[in-house]
Length: 388
Image 1 (cartoon, rainbow, N blue to C red):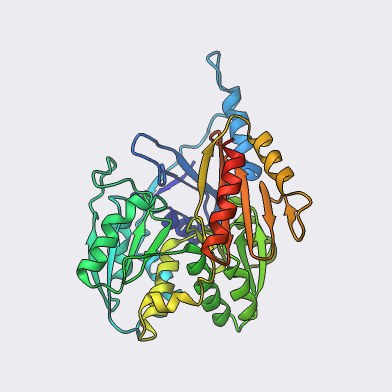
Image 2 (spheres, one colour):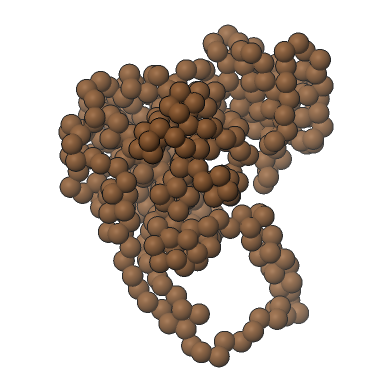
């Protein structure tokens, strides 16, 4: 087997290399997980996904055949393979910057928290030459994560960034996870910006770039704001299950130009349908730098409702708890159900989704409503049933 070794990289840099070189890819990473974890992310040639239905089950079957008594039958190689080293970082940065024009934006001061992960490797090259005053935080690569876990989805891990944005008087802050494929945004006040608002903002920009038409993918727990903004900008929203393999498959099947998830994964047709938080960050910088107002004002039109965020509950029987919740809302006037992914219950002023974790004995709850009091009421009702 011939191997191209690209060395240190972010996950979206692996996708770039897989797409550009048209080769399958693999990288060692535990993504956003704590330091004691490790793993391998894989893709087919052209950055096509390897998910449960697109190869992972086959890999599991092969692994199950690998016993103490011996290995499965694998044909012996007859020709020695080669290892070629290739630097793809500069090409990755060039490709991203070819998709978003940042040359004419006003100068911006941006704090970036790399969390001692791969953002510290990629950000300097991507931001080089742009009208940005970069304030780096935790750019030293260190898999022990001495400052905080490289998981910005957990609010405690962006506290340092929020403080630094305010202390520096910066225009915004960006936080990357360990493998730097996800990007979280903090506004000039130090407030976190909802990934749904970022999805809506980028969707509007991508639709404009494509002549005001196109399909936009969003998973079922992104805000109502996302399909609203997509329709207002001439696009067609398509709702999918949670998970990168589902979104990538739907992107390919529908020819979608962009897709977004609540977890700050952002997918682009011009990036082999793969996810790249860095490209989403460049879109935010371009949108902010192309007008004079602050980020909080810019994103307010894309953030129209109140949400609970994801609330996890440990349960002994996921199916039984879910059935109990469904029974409690069955028969209520104006309430609808769907089971695309877990249980989604919707009404005129609120919706919630309750879905089981694939890896832990958890139920994950997301609630959205038109106002805080309705949100609190529905959230507390559902949690009381789940945790009874």
